[in-house]
Amino acid sequence: MLWNFLLPAGLAVQKNNFRRLLRTVEALSDLGPSLTAERDFPQTARAMISAMLQAGGAREAVLFGFSDKPSLLTSIAAEGFALMPEPAVIPLLPKHVHALVSARGPIILNSSSSENFLSSNGNVAPELFKCIAPLRVGNKLVGLVALGRREGDALYDSEELDALDLLCNYVAVAMQNHVLAQTLAQRVSENLRLLASLHGFYDTALEAFAAAIDIKHVDIHGHSLRVGRYAAAIGEAMGMEPGDVAALRSAGYLHDIGKVAVDKRLFGKPGSLDPEEFREMADHTVVGHQIVSGVQFPWPRIPEIVRSHHERGDGSGYPDGLLMNDVPIPVRIVALADTFDAMTSPRPYREPLSVGSTLSEIVRLSPQKFDPNAVQGLLLQVRRDAVGSNRTPFVEDRISLNIAPADVDHLAATLQHKITHGRLYLA
Image 1 (cartoon, rainbow, N blue to C red):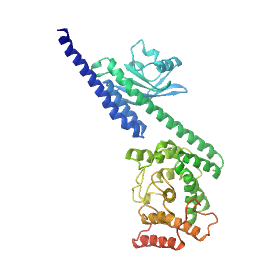
Image 2 (cartoon, rainbow, N blue to C red; image 1 turned 120 degrees about the vertical axis):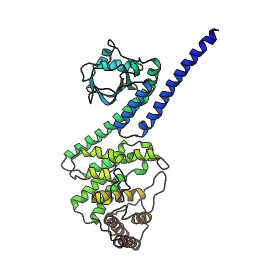
Image 3 (cartoon, rainbow, N blue to C red; image 1 turned 90 degrees about the vertical axis):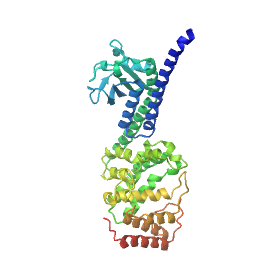
Image 4 (cartoon, helix red, strand yellow; image 1 turned 135 degrees about the vertical axis):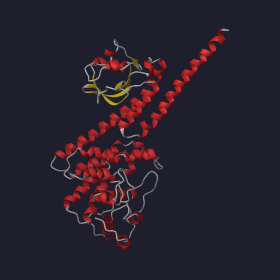
């Protein structure tokens, strides 16, 4: 009789636990793609908040980041609170930091316990929070999730706290990655500012930066240096002034600087990138633009070149899908130099193309994707190599120059015919 009496209650408890577990799994399922693929951190933060609300059955939540000099919690995203300032700021004393680092899992707050973890000296009252969950990576505090009221003002029970604790492990890692990426970008940008404070950039300094950018994988070693040289040579062949040629060289050296924030594993992947991986790689243009925008370069177009060197004339490029007339000439030149080096260099998923095959493909895609005047400059430099008139070879010894001057002339004539036959005249 006793067993029969207890069975329904036990089943009810199991059912409730299963529902809570299912809710947590659903929250993780929703949050996972944002943590691994989303590059816009404010949007990622909103996804974290939604997952926390779902797992805890809460109506109000706020995500704080932590900085230790001075010790400060600063809100990144919030939902549900009617009177939450933006940003909300909570200074912390050493005792608060120690308590948050030492806490094991989420903490239920009340009027007597909140002062052990949070200061009342900020612009938000700790009394708004009913539950807090420190975000830690190892023994390092990286942030805090604070929850307000639940539906029906119910109390947070152990199952909700367990679900929050599970999610906090993932959120803490995402917060730490965001902080590391910010720190890296700031460090690179600060180094560039130091270089800019000198009276002009010296090739040796920028070459060191270019080498550092390409260090992530053996297959791209020297890429940025070559793109700088190729871009400058194409500009010279187009009749540009020496100062503009120097600007192209420097922009080529720095065009991939955003790749310092790209996961190293993507550079060695033997197959094609999947859509999420491609988006992560493509974001190097935006990250690079953010890094160099705060630097006063002698050449004002460098940030624009860093952002737009993957744009194509037909609008198929990224990050902004610009058309040819919206892309300045220096950007078009660096884009072409970047493409030429990429095609003639080995990659984990393919062997390098020959110079002849590369030029044929570039001419085929011009003028739809590449500026025809820049392509003519590229062809001119390759032809000079073919006849031995370049004092410094345009194409390095690592590449076999398997194209005769007559073949280069044929490609130039083909390109000219494509332009004039279609009555296409570009600025």
